[in-house]
Length: 40
Image (cartoon, rainbow, N blue to C red; front, side, top):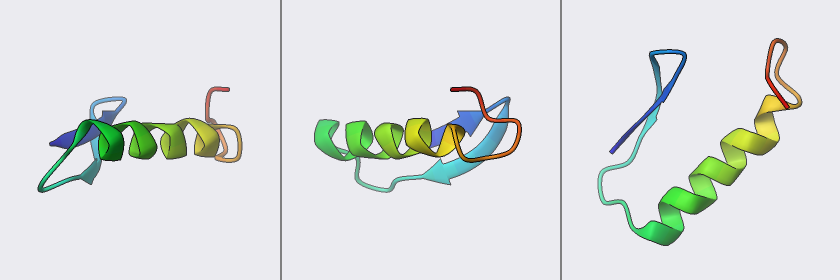
């Protein structure tokens, strides 16, 4: 699985499970508030 942000590759996961994908997406969401230009 690959994760894209604005069309750019930001992460990948070799053996995704529903729980791992959800955890990764939550981390991206939490990081958006702290990254310059991130959308919260």
